[in-house]
Image (cartoon, rainbow, N blue to C red):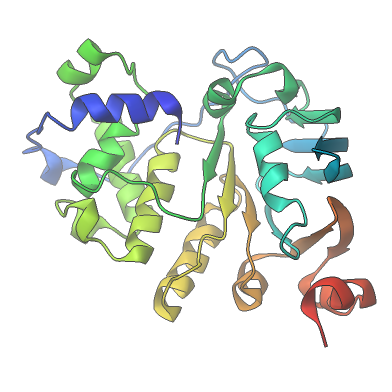
Length: 292
């Protein structure tokens, strides 16, 4: 979630909006927006056939090389799973993509023209990259509806936030996201009353309200029940194609359900890549991660 969204949330928690027109919402429409090289509106250029491209990326912390000559790319609409042992560099890789960490060397591009290393963390979120951490971050004292409304791409200034009302297109978009994340029946519930899995879905919905081209999802099914895990797999497969997804996960059953290509990281670089069956049969992967 972007810093400006969190700031706006603090201002809007005190305001309780009336949503009497919610019954009129329909699950139609939804914007397809991209953002150009300098964080201005426009389509993300994927001429080269890649939505995300990392080449020879390295970063060290106190002499420890967390990322070591990492090269990786993801195609538009692809759902890629990334696995690997603790300390393999998975979180640091996401930190670099989102601007939280600057690499010592290497290239990181969003689409064919946007050099992510030229942008700050908040700007990268506006470019169309959404990130979800393992622990859900929602406004528990607000309803599901209010959380999604808050996440809309709008002017987050205090005055604009206080006076904001949904227009028809925004109402349609919100209803569409509610349907996608399976929370239509919980629209008026406080987020704090949701189950762990429902909170995870709500946060994913909040990211979707910002129309991301690329979603980075860190261990999204950790702590979920079997039923919630299965519904999350359905959700991700539904998002595949409309969005590009990078999913870091340890649950191999979940990975098998959702991903065609799996990337294995170890010691900050790609150890293996292929189908889950292929990487699970790789002796190097067995030795460093899966075990016998």
